[in-house]
Length: 141
Image 1 (cartoon, rainbow, N blue to C red):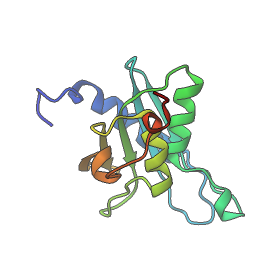
Image 2: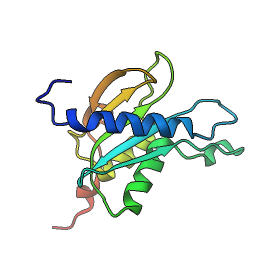
Image 3: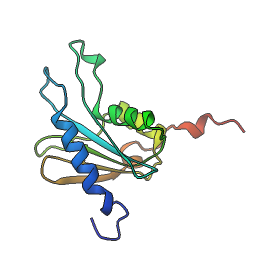
């Protein structure tokens, strides 16, 4: 990322938080550890990890955990998200988490995908969730 990128100053904090969260993930069934971190509108970083359950559909994604931590801290606006998985394959947010992010993030919000050692890709939320449905669709005139 270039020095003119507005996330340059915050990217390392996001990566560190997401990588640390990944290490705390509870994934005894899949062994697929994921960490996420969101940057809120106050410049604070909130992290989450995936938490599995023996009843597979009852697990929680890392992104959902990070969003919950952000809301608990009193914020409802995501300025950026980092998701960290392992290895060379990109770990992007699942469809459900993309919609959860849309509740709190604008279409141009950066979504950064990384692994243990490097940033692998960068998207906007609109690229991951085109033609999305968001809170403004429910606002009354």
